[in-house]
Image 1 (cartoon, rainbow, N blue to C red):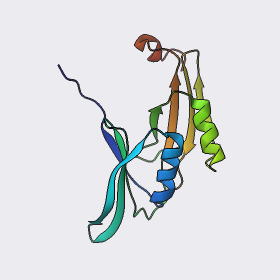
Image 2 (tube, rainbow, N blue to C red; image 1 turned 90 degrees about the vertical axis):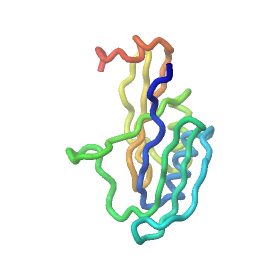
Image 3 (tube, rainbow, N blue to C red; image 1 turned 180 degrees about the horizontal axis):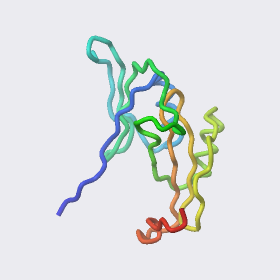
Image 4 (tube, helix red, strand yellow; image 1 turned 30 degrees about the horizontal axis):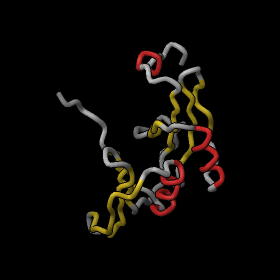
Length: 143
């Protein structure tokens, strides 16, 4: 029996090439699956899908407002969480590329995370798990 899975999230950004660089710096195993230019309700925009064969982030240009502040109470996406094999390596690659760490997340024996804000876009949480056991990975008693 198949089950439901996450496929993609769509983000409108102010600087698509820079956000694409951010994503591919953090996740060098992700590739651009497709992209192009299209008419978005009378405005030309560039777009691309970056990810794996199973899931991706749809990025589109044309953003003309400030991104949502993750510390606000505004309605909207606060962050996108992505599982990575080595959170320290992700933070180092992003820092070296000019994308500084916003803050470290919770640190337990099973889970470590770090938050970085993509340029002119949403905050990303990069999560490293040190166990494959779902009961341990999903233990929220230490949060």
